Image (cartoon, rainbow, N blue to C red; front, side):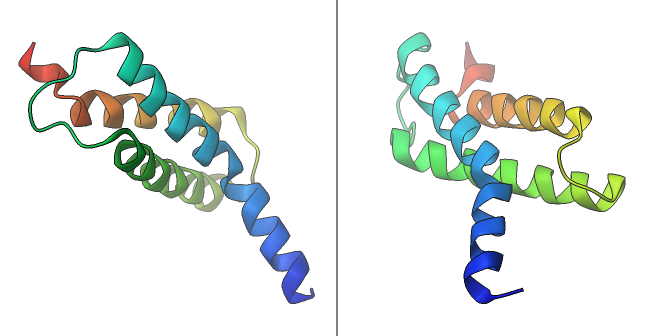
Length: 92
């Protein structure tokens, strides 16, 4: 596989984590009140993205292939939980 093809495959692999992570960060900004000490939205999105990419990699290891619906469900749950923790949802 050529390096450009590998790069394209890696981008397509982490694209769902990027979309869900930043969507959660932006939606969290709209729906939750801003608490003191809450990170900026882009930092929340970056952390959610990292959590989501780790979940996608774990799903690839567990199931042996990419694109299982269980992995995407775990992605949504992990990013939602991460966003709740970052926004300080346990304090309310």
